[in-house]
Image (tube, rainbow, N blue to C red; front, side):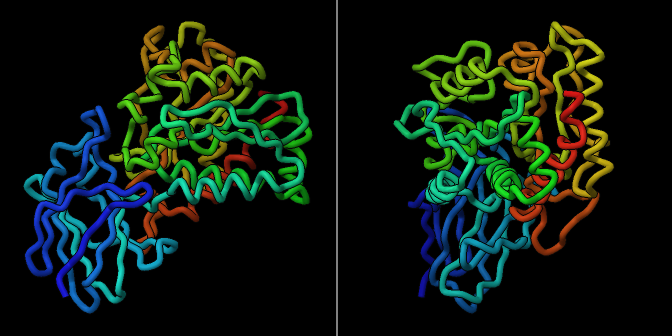
Length: 372
């Protein structure tokens, strides 16, 4: 039986250039109306009992080619358990070599988080007592921007994910947030819900998620460059979320993302905003340092450079929220590679570890909420 490869499903992305025996030449498709590409997700049939070689020919032209060295693709036979595949990057080609012991195998840049999984998540928590569902608005393709509010405290906390749809680890992190906040018998949860009100947006870019994009929405817009002047024509997703934030205020916020190149979990702050002051900055640093002390799945040595004084990009959500609300705002970055300080040779950085990191973030927040 010859190989059959398709990505014609929710969140899929690949173009088949050619198949020769057990080797397939492939290309990642660009985001619609954009030059960005890096996310891939496809299915292989007809390979049971064989070893396949999958060659992504256009890897060198991707958005972040520095992300390929040291990277390993994910593979699954059931779309639930994802493990690391043998992957190399040479001469601009990303090559995945994998023995197949099942009738079907799926390959992806990271464990996918489909719109169907998102819809199941929303349905599940809409039925949980204490969770108030709200549709904040609609995307360009007409999909709802779903949100939940939980808690009765005075501190407004916003947690949101997947401005960049290919960074699927961000919504797995949100899963961890929701499951912990639903556990009202837990003392950490009880303390947080008494002192804070949480506003949670699991997926800010459902159109890009469904289309198999890396970084943009339905019309090629990078939502995390829209926060200064969002518009209904280009970025209704940001406009509706920012409007909801204006109504509640923001004391603390985490924008969850994934980073292609850095093999670690880290946080980026809001250094360089015009209204920066050390009192606010110290709250951010205290959270970051406490998280590193709290879990081996977080570190502070690797990360992004800080913006110089007055030079922060206010089109990005973390900087905009810190400037607009005086919020302790941050961007959480999780790796497509692995958290090298505490690696997992079988699964790499994984959905389960994303959820556990969310628990750790809430535990640290609970210890600091009085000072935020």
